[in-house]
Image (cartoon, rainbow, N blue to C red; front, side, top):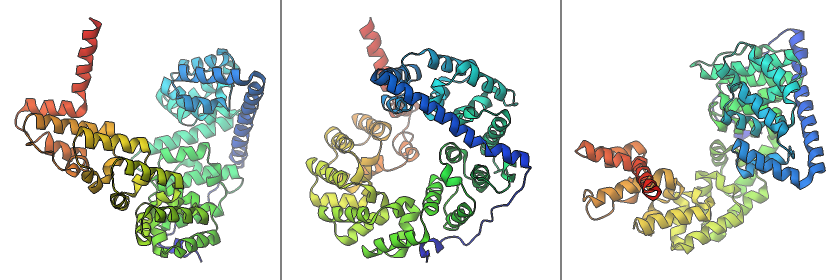
Length: 478
């Protein structure tokens, strides 16, 4: 039973059982209940407004969010399904209030993106007193805005004592993350009890293990189920630590989420599904370490991905190799895989070359058709590398065209134009597959003459192109 989870480190993490005053217990019991009631009221108000004002209100909301906060249309449309308004008086008063307390435009955008219900809150009667009270807690102006922009749900709490406890707790997490040592948070001294208290205690336990702020705060905001309870959380945390997951990575949280959600029996059943396809228990363990979501897929999904790759031309042992190398491809749909194959064939690759590319770089199975087409055409048509060069180094299809491929290729073209590389292009791999530092040493800094090095560096960073665009703009303007 649970053979998969017996691998890894044998160290045992004993989570502390700690005690505190009953007043603090009662205080924290109300924190999330108050927060949820506030958000429910905001959501209800938004729903009423949406039904009353209909499409007009949603259209105005989207336009307002894009123009006033600089949000993308997609994000604005998502928010408009939660809050809706027909005029800008109330949201303007909320945004102006945040600005008056020193919040930057980006911080305000972050706050509204995380907690859009604030746009329909009463700025003067509800938000202003809280901001004023929290500002008096001793944090500097920059600390104050940082705390609230990262966990704006603090502003949902009504009681001052609860508000101060939650605010101080988040402040400690942020401060601890800036320290070179993982400090023990004082609120980890909470006794056993309600789910609300468990959240604070369990988040503290994660912080003491070294889980960084960027992974911790989202749990505090929205993922209550992961850090609720005590025994199940303690058991799951122990297993994930013993398996050797690094607490500073997102994969640690992913693994914890999977282990806590699945029973021992469920995990064993998933392992059996993979074994039927030819994987060993060790293979499944290896895939889980790379991508914990491996154990959440249904038998139908796993088998479908296997059969789709089989139909594409890969042999069973090759499919096993692809899965073990990049288990994320299990999540790709049949359509995604078929579109990738069709796109690559349309670009001139043979089916044998496709299979070779899939084995070398399985990630290309899930790349968008537009991305693969744009990158391949640039490398082959503009740079004149042969298709076989892409087959040999298919990882180039995953590199950023704007940030990596084009800047390096501009340097190569400049060097060839000056006769410093001969008449033939260098191999593709030494140009694109190496690190930025290695590229600069090989193709930029190794030349004699400060002016030439400066010119090549300007080409690499794009400053030359920016300067040329500015000159053209000035000429056109005159």
